[in-house]
Image 1 (cartoon, rainbow, N blue to C red):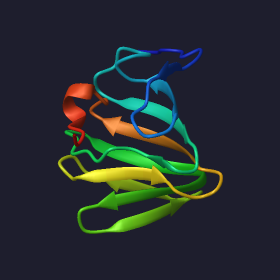
Image 2 (image 1 turned 90 degrees about the horizontal axis):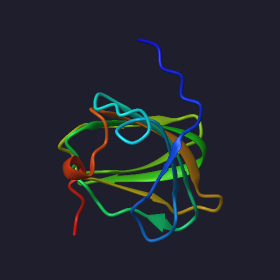
Image 3 (image 1 turned 135 degrees about the vertical axis):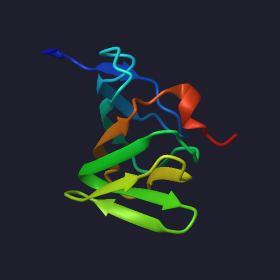
Length: 120
């Protein structure tokens, strides 16, 4: 199979401030349930609700710094670094520093609202 993606779909983001999500592959843009690949741009001070997803999330930071909190640890993932959060792990993403963060997230299987299990 060959599938050219001419442009991403913009997807609404959770959190206290607007975050840009450009989905290239996933349930919205390519109707893929196997994987989602999206470029994220979050401003300084953005905080996403905690979540316990049913998918593995691979994150590569392109610019800035993304803070990743788990129940046991807290990581500042900087440009050129990456982190994997396995399914079933509680996680919270934030971008507390000047300049925010730009990163690529890959979810296996694809991200879905019914499988992300965000905190109330």
